[in-house]
Amino acid sequence: MTSLQEVLNDAADDPASPAWDLIWQESCRQGTCDPASAVLLPWLASTCANFRPHDRERAVVLAGFIAVDADDKSRGLYADDIATLRALTLECLASASSDTMFVYLQQAILGFDGDEVWGKELDRINDAEVDVQCPACAEDLLVDLQSGDASIEPGLSSQLATNLHAEALRLGHESVATVLTYLWG
Image (cartoon, rainbow, N blue to C red; front, side, top):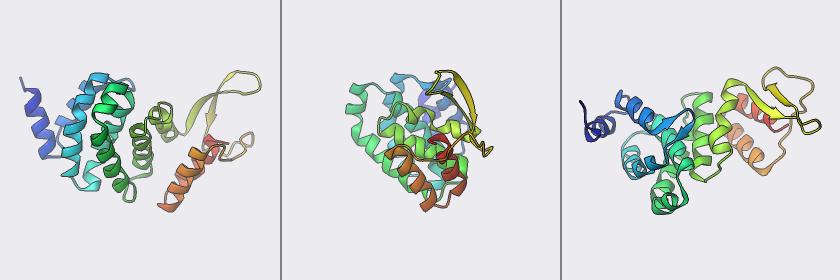
């Protein structure tokens, strides 16, 4: 049986190590991370700092999920590590390996910022559909974000939407920018 320290050492030595899968499985389940996983934030900060931006993508996304689910005490205790991870994630945005990863990186940044809604849910746009509640009738609807559905008026109805959209355009992720206008339309 492999010890936790051996798993962490393997992951720290190689950003493509299968050890990362085990760390993900032990930290997060079904979209929620165990708040106790916050103890990994200092290790993640130092490990990610040693990886090139492209190699650290998956690790900083994990860190964002852990940070957003951390309790207030842990967020305070690990504030410096969260700030370091946020800065490392920002470095990854400019060279994101795909549109999908770009969205995950944006979501991680929101997680570091403590946004409990979009720090957990922004990645739903990677599936090009989202569950929403109709503001007129309160009916739950599944909205297709890529169909060009005439019932959706593209827009950016919040400052967050405007910022994410501008960032996607600035960094060359036009398809992400378009989907964001449907999400917030």
